[in-house]
Amino acid sequence: MSTEPTEPTKPTKPAAPTTPTEPTQCVVPADSTRPAEPRHPPRSRVLPHLLSLLDPRSLRWKIAALAAAASCAVAVAVGVLVHTTTYEWSLNTGRSEAFQAVIRAASGTPGEDPLGGAIEDPAALPPELLRQVTPRKPATWHDDSKAVTWYDDTKPDEPWMWAAVRSGGRVLAVKVDMGAERRSLQALDRHIVMATLAALAIVVPLAALVAELPNRRLRRVAGTARRIAGGDLDARTGAGGRTRDEIGEISAAVDSMAGALQERLRAEQRFTADVAHELRTPLMGLITSAELLPEGEITELVRDRVGVLRGLVEDLLEISRLDAGAERAEHVPVPLGGVVEESVRRTGLPARVEVIGDPVADTDPRRLDRIIANLVVNAHRHGRSPVEVTVRGTTIVVRDHGPGFPGTLLAEGPRRFRTGAAERGKGHGLGLTIALGQAQVIGAALDFANAPDGGAVATVRLDAGPRG
Image (tube, rainbow, N blue to C red; front, side, top):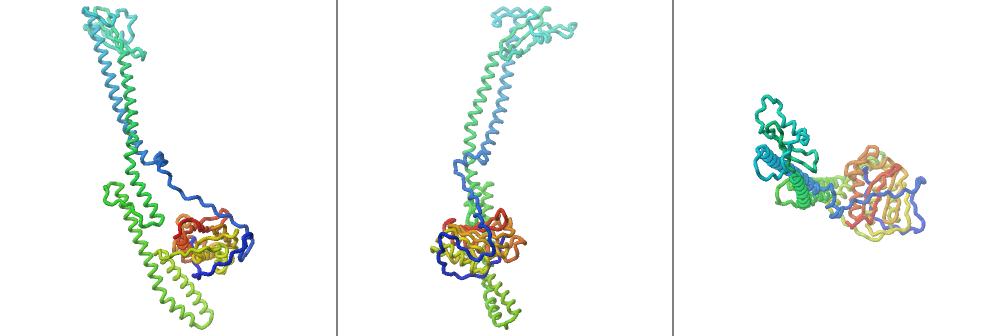
């Protein structure tokens, strides 16, 4: 929603306080229930630094998770390689030992037999070993001294390495206990897992700590962007001549964007002020000429249009002063009920004014009058009757029963020279912009919302923050 503002109003003496026990009313076009004060969600607050450190969505922990995943991948690759190499080495060692033992048994080499002797009973030999040692073509079998080996891991807790050889029509076999090698391999696997966990316990916090520096720079850039979006066009990231990495490029781009935006807005403000000042001189001549015209219907029409043009020029001058920061508030204690009633009365428009109690606020009555008058005129021009004004404490609510504010205004705030929606009428769209600027000068908050049952709701909170 935007508005075509009213003629500039002159400051008036605040009205006397009304009776504190009964609500006071002004012109009431029709009976209606008092609207409930719109509820506004509190502004989001920055989480404590400790909670931000524990936020799993933080880039810090994503980098730490990436480092942990890379470390795990390296550990798994190294672990598999070490496990496979050690396993093959133990098998080769077992095969060599069993092979030498069975050869000694077949050749009858004297000496100590630590394996407990050779086995000749085929029934005591594993079928797989017998299958390997039995020749497939007996007619061409000549190498009776050829030995075969077979690793028996059917019982994981009791692995054996078998070796067998056919000698003189009989089969000799020996077996070597591989339990010690299996337990050594299991111990090695456990040590690899423990070393991996220990490395992760060091790598993850270290990665999170190292990631804090780029995170801090990114948070500074995000904070600067939020300040710029909030209207602080002097905000900069302060990147300066730091390392020109990707974050540095982003910081420089944000600073460049802020500088260009600030220059464009200043040019717009200068243009608005120049146009208003340049129009003022010919406008005064036009007003004087209109006053000299003979009375008649055409003269009244000309004077009406000249009045509208004068109001527009005065609004442009006021906006230029607000943009330049030249406005200063003069705070005095005032009875809010009397000031609001007088502001509504001076608009000449019907509106119901309800004052709860006898509120008093320390504010600038002239600027508050300007705010209330623009909101009431806007409610009549772009909304529908009845228009209701409620004063409760230091909060003033102006509501109409029209189509409500457009979504663009609720999302972005009022913009000059933009009405926002065709159904809310036409105008040069400066009233709400001026009201918002004057609210900032007196340190008040001006919020816009739509009532659940229809209608636009503008809320002025005089105790919103420090004075402007």
